[in-house]
Length: 122
Image (cartoon, rainbow, N blue to C red; front, top):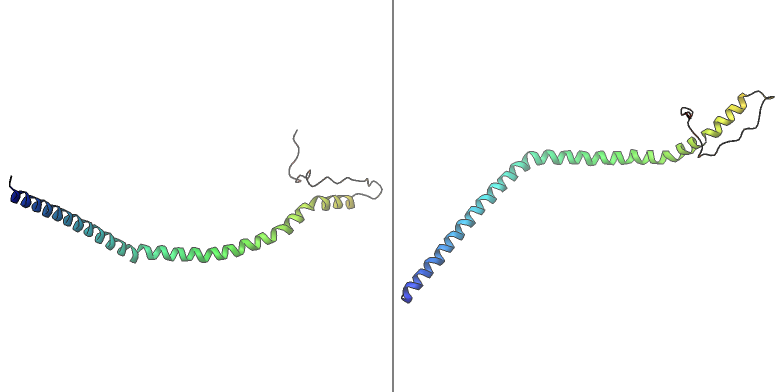
C-alpha cells in the first residue's frame, strides 16, 4: 500500500471519530436541555408548593419547641407532687381515723409505692 492511501484512510478515520463524538455531544446536550426544561416546570409548580410547606413546618417547629420547653419545665414539680402522694394519703388516712384507735403507721418507701388502682392478685 502506498503512503498516500494510508494518510487518506487515517484522515477519514479521524473525521469519522470527530463526527461520532459530535453526535454524542449533541445527543447529550439535547438530554440536558430536556432535563433543564423539566426542572424549570417543576420549579414553577411543585417546588413552590414544597417550599411553602417546608416554611410552614419550620414555623410550626418553633411553636412546638416553645410548648415542649414549657412542658419540660413543668415536669419536675409534677414529679415531686406525684412522689409526695403516698405521704399525703397516709396523713389523710391518719386524720380520718378516730383519735382513740389511732395506731402508728409506717410509711413505705417511694420505691414500694403502688397506685390505688393496682391491687396485688397473688
